[in-house]
Structures are given as C-alpha cells and as structure tokens.
Amino acid sequence: MSIKLTYEFDTEEQLSTFLLRGLTPAVATPVQPAATAPVAPIATPPAQPQTPVQPEVAAPVAPVAAPAAPAKASAKVPGQPVTIVQGATTNGIRAALRKVFNTKGATAATNILKEFGAVRVSDVPADKYADFLKACAA
Image (cartoon, rainbow, N blue to C red; front, top):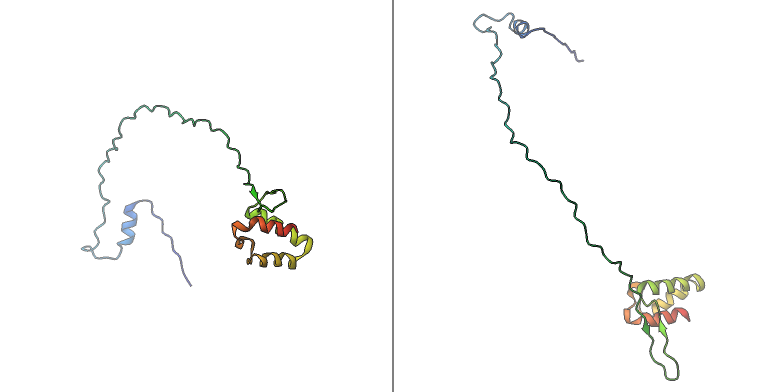
C-alpha cells in the first residue's frame, strides 16, 4: 500500500517554515535563495548576406541502347549451312529448359541437364550453351 501526499506553498518562506518546524534554532536557519547575477546575452556574429545557390545542371546524356544478345554460330557440318543460335545466354537456356519441362515433363528436362553434367542451369558451361539449346529443341 502506498500513500501519496502533496503539499503546496505560496512562497519559499512558507516552505522553509514547514520543513524546519520542530528543529532547534541552531539547526533551523532558513535557506535563502541564491542571488543570481543577470546573465549577459550571448553575442552572435553579424549575419552575412547569403548568395543564392545555383543548382548544378548536368550535361545531357545520350540514351544508351541495350546491347543485343551476342549471336553464336554452331559448329560447321559439311554439306549443311551454318545456323546462328540466338539467346545463348543463361536466361536463354533457362527459358529453353522451361519449355522442355512444360511440354515433355520433368524427366526429360532432368535428362538434358544430366547430358551436360549439370544439376541446374547455372552449372552448364558457357561454351556448351549452343549445344544445350539444340538438345532442348530436339
């Protein structure tokens, strides 16, 4: 259980009289508030005129066209024309394998990966991308 008491006084003299009641006169000397010297205001340096800041204007930059996917030629077979394989990138072979997966099933897609000694598309060596795309198209 707790009891809360609040005392209110109009002056500091009433407060010191209340707090010092019952004390001997030698101990009961009222506390006088400390005199405070007036505080001098802090000097501030004179304000300097500000020059407006000009925003930096960047030189116009010509738009850069996205580079096209490099085209790779497949191996030359005697008597056959050379064919150019587009999309010989990781994303290209991933899309081709996804197409195999959706049309022929997971087993066919897994078998193609195994042919190239890979567990996932990112394991296929970059120099085998064209062959991988051909295997997916077959």
